[in-house]
Length: 249
Image (cartoon, rainbow, N blue to C red; front, side, top):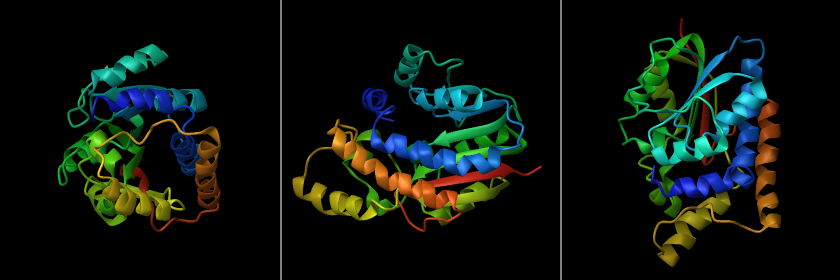
């Protein structure tokens, strides 16, 4: 990822509408699958600043090992007091096979070239115990590429079918998969396919500060989606894809 993005991440992860809403959605999807499951040691592969690793530790009391290749992100993690930070390439993890009860990787596969996602996926599954939980989130749909995508170094986006095939090749049974950030899709399409091409501005982070009222307003559609997903519904299209899987015994 573009090292410059870590500055924006560190400033936005706690209160920015997208992070707050997507955390709510992810935890909503996660709860039924962690309830009653023995999880002690967890890997977050591509942890960025380590903020989400801290969230997992506080919420579930798991022992989380956050890994990232970028020293810039790890520096923010150390400042935040995140424990057990490791600098490593997720396509070449420095851990023995079957080391973790659960593996999370959020918005990381998109930074590998299209077609090269198999290697990091195989590594994530290798270090996962049989029966362990795999949690992935990726950006979805090529039509939604934006100035932010270019700025962060995003190389690909996924459809549900392509992500499913990639994961199943690694001998993972899919427990649940859904699109997310769906209700704001018309706004995103208008912004990324009409407004941004008209402006012709250079790539830039999409995490610039916004007024509080707008931040709260944009979070509400994600709250609604979390409620729909809690009812067992699947969202058929959206700006992100979330997949929960289990390594076959």
